[in-house]
Length: 70
Image 1: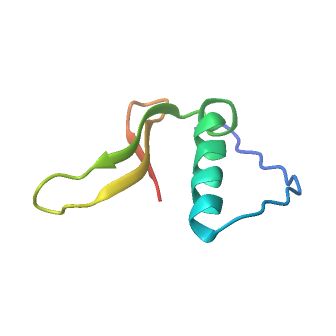
Image 2: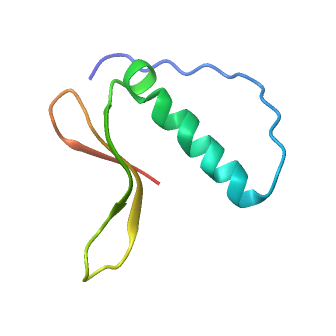
């Protein structure tokens, strides 16, 4: 994996906690490739009938290993 650089950008968001989480998730997904080097696969990916959950964001890294962002 290459060098990971993070930059802070002050952004003020308004709305409910749910709206804020969805907005944050969309922003992270939009920058997955350029910021983290992760190829986006799916949003709200179901974990199946046994776990009955969802993965917020699913992607693949440069080694085609799964990346889960919750």
